[in-house]
Length: 234
Image (cartoon, rainbow, N blue to C red):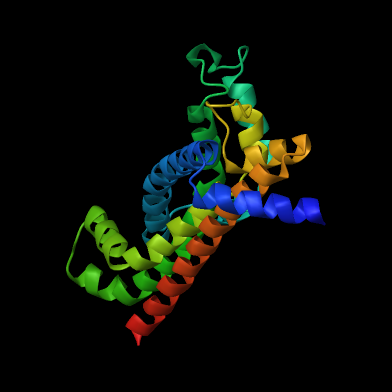
């Protein structure tokens, strides 16, 4: 019990004192996840808008696949990315394996379906309200997409934040493609797993506190945005 309290106390002071190792790992985690989030949002949001507006063959199939991919095991994504980026893989010549870039690629694949599926629900509802008006104005498809994306920006931010929450807590795929290399690819989740295995519970707890803080902050922000979105419609 004394060891537990000592570890908690040390972890607390590491967080409060902005421990160098803790800060480095946290900043790298944010760098990787935010980079993945920007790329994933740039892919997922226009895709969601197209699926809401356009009617084409296999549209429902694409939507079903997106929804199904939300539950894709991250370790499978990590394995696929590893195969493609390994020395014998088709992209092995790029030398991206065990780099932050590989981690970003894996996170993008993981969170694109999540962002696209959540965004599609919001954009589909908005399109049902805007359909007659935009059709009567004879605007182009690009203008329709831009209008929906702008007017649904708060809901789309919620979708993106959900993707961030999924990405920041990912460990399986990141461990496979990043390798958990110190001062290079070590992030919050992989560092927690490593330090726990080593028995360094103080650093593991400090990293856990930071991860919990980030997760709770994102969930509270999502809740606030969702509530204000509903109040705005009233």
